[in-house]
Image (tube, rainbow, N blue to C red; front, side, top):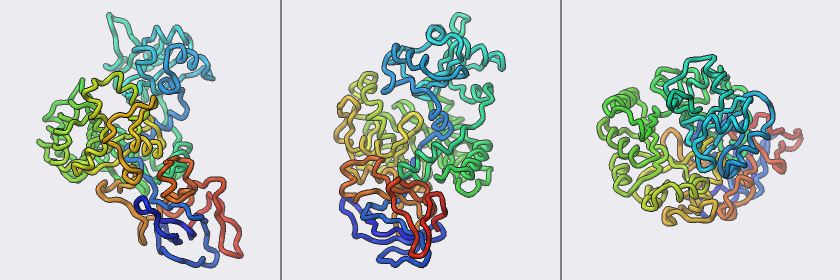
Length: 483
């Protein structure tokens, strides 16, 4: 394929127009190039050509399931009356799956509350944190008919409350749920210019690899780095999948034994794997830093979220050489809730960006979908504005430039300190915009994405994209191989 008349973005000023040739999944030439006989041609028309974006923290199964779920929290649902109306209006009579709930809507839901709204249809609603489910009596009855109650099913005074904590595996097994199809999710990702993702689900194991491999052979295009359990170290991954870090999921109210989790980190390091540690609170971050001091940090060890990071802890992160994967979109999506729930003294420490860069910490970004938006451009806008939905600004001095915000999604997943560039020999994982970067940087909207290529194959094209063949050949369709 020949991408003709593109601008290869470099900083806030667009580079000169150039043609880019692709063969065997890689960039083979850049310059003023003439089409080869029968070569596929993608007309860039002066639009910016970027490396494909990478979402460095996503949960694929949950994100795919969320596509077919009912939104139950802000911004779609803000109060109990709206939640009741949304649940009752949901089509169907079988299991109703809700997502994104926050207790600001109607408190900590109980089965009796849900029974009053939907008494006969089984309902399960996931909290925005991803750590708990709310079940009505019909759902409880079906689940407990199939399996013994797990430790995480809450009971008060001998009665089930309908609240299920940290039991996703039990729920999935009891429901005999098949892994969701990823095709629609893949289409949404590539429409935003995403060419690769890192699945950070802590339970990822051998069966996950089989499912993800099947998904990539049946329509899910983005490359996948698989983080998760230590067990993954023993698996030979198929093409399109690469091995990621061991995921350690800390919870402030139930922290693991420090010696045990330190040994887990040491074992991961001994197998050549880094660790990625979930830290949304200051206490979790303090714990993570203590365990990495004890285990000894290795290149690639990373903190996921760093939700609250005061200056002294940022200094320790820098000293240990750790990397941080943040979720800039949370400021836009959850910022108003943070202002209501988080002490004002911690507002300057929420999901920081500029402070990490100035401390010399390698910084990248992920969506944390489905718990955050899939749209990387929305995350970039949030990184530049630090503005909540209500228009409040959280820590203006943490803002990034549009180039720095884009940079968060251009890190090499195998080495976050390295930025992917459009150069001869590089993989042809590309995102073509419909305008020069100098204009795009003022908008940062997913609607700008004209085409996305993965290994030189056109996996997304907007309806107005001009794709053809050199003279004498018929037009190339979007689903055809692109060289």
